[in-house]
Image 1 (spheres, rainbow over the protein chains, first blue to last red):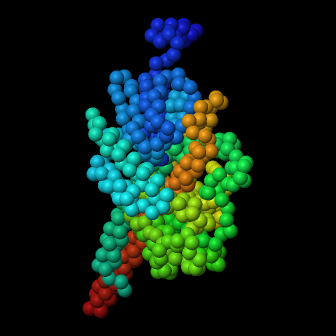
Image 2: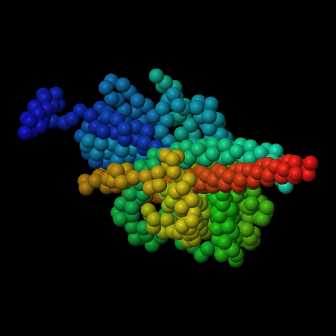
Length: 155
Length: 347
């Protein structure tokens, strides 16, 4: 009974702050090794395969593949960035789940390794024989460039 | 009669050995706990991926309705003439029969594929050493090569198990997927020690490719632990903080179940067929990754059990040596008394 009363007060105060929609959504980023992010976010950007997608709370249900790129989200005025290599995302109105093969924070990226990777990929692009070699080299190059770019945004 | 001093020296040396084996046991227990935690942390991704694929399978027709062709090369079943066999052992010994058992199972598998070309990829030093002694080292076969090569070792990965990373597995799996897709190999098997808990382990040969059912691996050869092995494992796990039950994964699994399967109309940014195509290779990767992680846990568990047995044997040995020493001392005293008494009687 007292619980009910409290709930109604809470819902009233929430109504005052946000008239129709909660202003955050739940976010999970999962890699093969572990769950690296479990947080709330006010907005986020994901590197969809067909281009970047901006997501706000209440987004329509969506499923997309992610390509190499920068994933960022904002929570309480702080922006968190991750370099994603390949991923898969499910967007629901109140929750976003991202499966990523690798998701690194700017400060965790090994810049030297990324430079090597970039160089290797460029060589492969030049000397590649088959179509497969070429696509793979291109993916590698994109991943390396993403890493370098995100690493450049260290807080 | 054994020299008392010699026996005492031996007892001291056995006590030292026991100290070392006990320490190794505790180290293995700690490593085992960490390996179990890692396996648990890796579960959400694996489960989510599996669930997405399962739900996509129901949405996507596996055969193209227009051409009748299979949607994905990794599902293609071909007559098996070129086999890739991945053997997962440990890098180090002193783990009881861990490595031997795996290699026995591997040999049995190889015997069953006698009339085929088998390429072996060894993960772990112990397996590499054994297989290199028995089979020639060769380059991976080209896709269009016609000649039969019998059994050959085509790759080795040493020192990767200690710090197992997904990126390493990813490299191995990429090559496997590529070679399967361009028909250089017709099937891929993985032999490893499956580990659910200290007392729930199996030695399995799993068929990785072609994929037959998503979510359940096809096991073509399996060996359970014997009752005796289980008892020994329970004994060894006592007081180490290693649980006997498999970790509770129900919450993780329930959460993963919901991934990408909510009862809503999703907007698909890419057509489901395309998603299916790019997700399937990731499934192969995660299967191999999981196998390797379980093998690492199993290796630590085997070492823990072996070191526990060694410590117990040392204790037994100390007991019997102590008995022998006491007997020898008693005999010496008795002899002296007799000498004194007979000396007194004579005089």
